Image 1 (cartoon, rainbow, N blue to C red):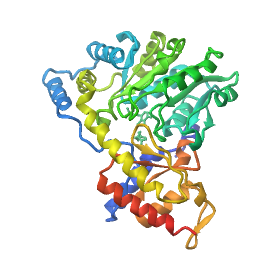
Image 2: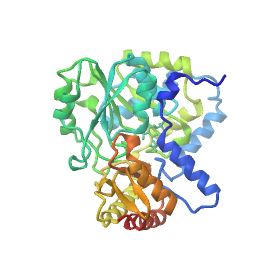
Image 3: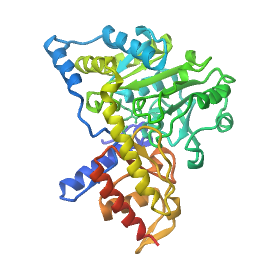
Image 4: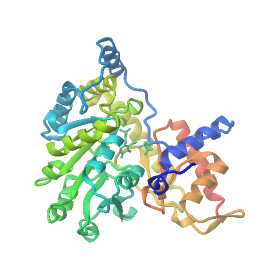
Length: 397
Ligand code: PMP
Ligand code: GLU
């Protein structure tokens, strides 16, 4: 008998991966699709990283590695944390995983009990809410507004905390808004958190190297927060290594041990060859990949400029990552021909079906007023996509 678990019925498919799949299918059917749905750098992995992976194969890094990762790689990441974030994480406080996605899953499974609440300032990255559900936790969404640059205020945080709150997860630079918290903003949030010592903070810094403002601020560096913060990072975004599947955490040692225990029963260590490639990546000067950040910044300006000309879209100026998250709520309840655009999901379907541009609805990120564009695409594709989006929106009366 076909009978799925009750967990499966509560879980949504990843909307980002679903849109990527639909656009692939449309392309295969011969349509001229521009896919701005998947958050993945359009650059290839730099050659010096590939060379390190080739050396790792030749040197037989092909056996089971220790569950938390090779010591030499964790040592390199420990040095990276000190160099880039002024954070002291010993190699024992670092756990390597099969992508930051698995790092996040380990954390939820290791720290959240069924029924406990996890605060997710919205918009949040799609998988946070589902990973929390897998662990039996309850996602508690805190909406923010485009007027406040999609950032959480201390008052909003205070109002959302209950005696069941266990964790808060946020990303900065943020997927999907591109917003970046300053050190001062993190300090203001920490004032509230310090009144509630049972809450653990997960600071997802995977877009650290794609920050147009300067140095990324880390919650773990805020006075009094180090012992209850986990810093999540990885090589997917900053080094164009999405397919290598390598993420990591720096955490209090008891949390690192807990995550290793979980991981040891699911996947063991991440691929040893990917680990050695990641070692080369984190040891390199960040200048070696600055060309990608510069390209993303140019594209950010192009996209902000193009979308700002569309009267009924409200556009934020992202300070990092490679996403923009326009508010499209002025179109809701209006019609394109016979078709009523009820919400952002309808709007994304309408744009995909009529102009073949794949976007992701804001619903997936906990903000139903917006949609997400991943601008990790060529300038030619972005220019064409903006033209098509504008044409589709113009037809909405
Ligand atoms: N966090 C955020 C905010 C992301 O956008 C992503 C991208 N998928 C991840 C974590 C996971 O990245 P990965 O598993 O590729 O390391
Ligand atoms: N993080 C990327 C995104 O948000 C990759 C897709 C995924 O892993 O869900 O699109």
